[in-house]
Image (tube, rainbow, N blue to C red; front, side, top):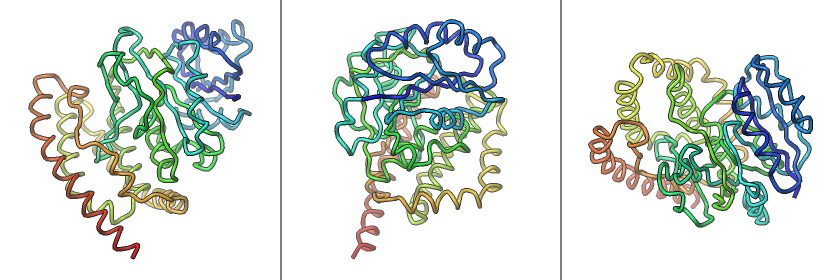
Amino acid sequence: MDVSVITVNTNEKHRLINFLPSMFDTKGSFELIISDNGSTDGSREYITQNFPQARVVENRENLGFALANNVAARCSKEDILAFINPDTTVEPLWLENLLKPFSDQKVGLTTSKILLMGARDKINTCGNTLHISGITQCRGMKESANNYPVEEEVAAVSGAAFAIRRSLFEKLGGFDADFFIYMEETDLSFRARLMGYKCVYVPNSIIYHDYMLRFGPKKVFYQERNRYLMLIKNLEWQTLILMIPILFFAEIVTWGFVVLNDRKNFSNKLLAYAWIVKNWDLIMKKKSSVKRHKTVSDGVLLSSTDYRINFSQIVEASYSEVSQFIFDGIFLWLRAVFLKTLSFLENMRQR
């Protein structure tokens, strides 16, 4: 099965020095396309001089992760698209194994077992989890690399390393470019699953990721804005209304995170709300487009979400245990009531 491998580079020459030799040790046939977001660190020169077999798509400015990937995808030619971060290295069989589940026509996306580059016996993520509120987290973060040994469906792929059928990518219109960065792969997975496709985690597709939880000056803005955008455009109004109690408590959690970890960028939460209001008409157009392609109900999709937020991934240990104790019970109960009510209403509508 032929595949186009795509990576986005934004002044990541120091990453490419490790990434590219590893990539070209990959077994099998593939084309590598690097979508360069106006890099000024000598990245493009390094690639063309040392790895002329890689194709560079030159963007004049930083288009963001989502749009830069879309641009490269339009330049690609193979039936499967694989997206991978430049801050990774790979095992030689990562790609061959990542493609195997596509023998099942219902599999739309596949994602690798991603281990921490600095601690290769620990997991970065084995697919991503989706909380009932739309909060997305790494599945298995910092657990033993021996965990999650079985191929299985997951709520969402990890943008660090995943593959998708070109035909599905084109049906979905690619990544939503308005996401710019963060959660674009969750939204892509969400929309694919609403069309009846599966996202599958592949444990023998091994990637090493130079991952560290970082909080840039606008990270909260993008993560929260994109979470709201994903939920509003993809879910029915009935579903969103029933979710109000869940979303209220999710706001308590996310505001608490801002106060504890990102106080200097406090306004980013407010800016996320403002963006949604300002771009309401655009969101409604997206919502109409998603609705036309839905084949799976919100209730079926959301039944695969989690009630548990892994607070150890977002706050210090002293806060995480208390937060876990308080919010696990709240979200467990709210999720159960929500799903039962939504299922009843959807069944009534079908009669």
